[in-house]
Length: 224
Ligand code: FES
Image (cartoon, rainbow, N blue to C red; front, side, top):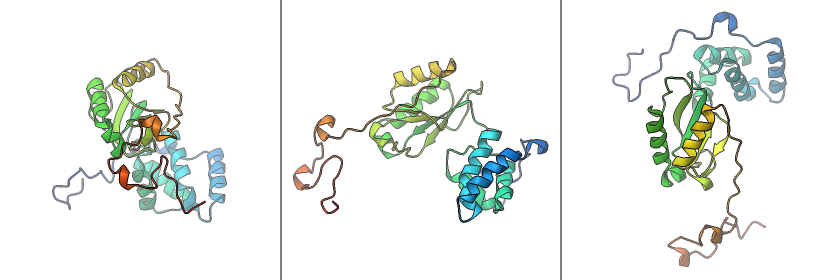
């Protein structure tokens, strides 16, 4: 562990942990290399394909330990730091081993206002773990996520970078966990946002008298 920063606010990652992917397994197959070459050919420079290649590595190794990040960097002839920066920016890339099912509970602004933290704490209590942890049986990981772009059906969570569960309730969480314990992944649920504010119970803005152009969704008066 680094010792040049005294009392870091969060623990700094071990810069040279023991590798978890055996050296003999740390490679892309010829087919995977061909696929990578196709992706790379779509961009002016190889780094354009970095997200797709990181994704491939995650699907192959289950997560992205430093040696997998290094493999991606070597494959695309990029500096490790640049690839690491991409991998750590997105919560969808797993930097450590996760459970079979990962619950990304959105606690960003809209979800927070609609009870996102209540849902997160309910999940934590139900699974007896804290956000960021994995259950002892390795089945579930719970983590907080930033906005996942479904604010209109807040609060919500995403299951392992896949299906969204909208308008989350304790009952929906119970049903979700029961289904996943039986190996049934929910289908992606497509939710149409209300197109008319009356569907939402009318305009609830308190300053409505001062707004002349407000509609749901907002419509520009200048762009036709
Ligand atoms: S704030 Fe939760 S999806 Fe946008």
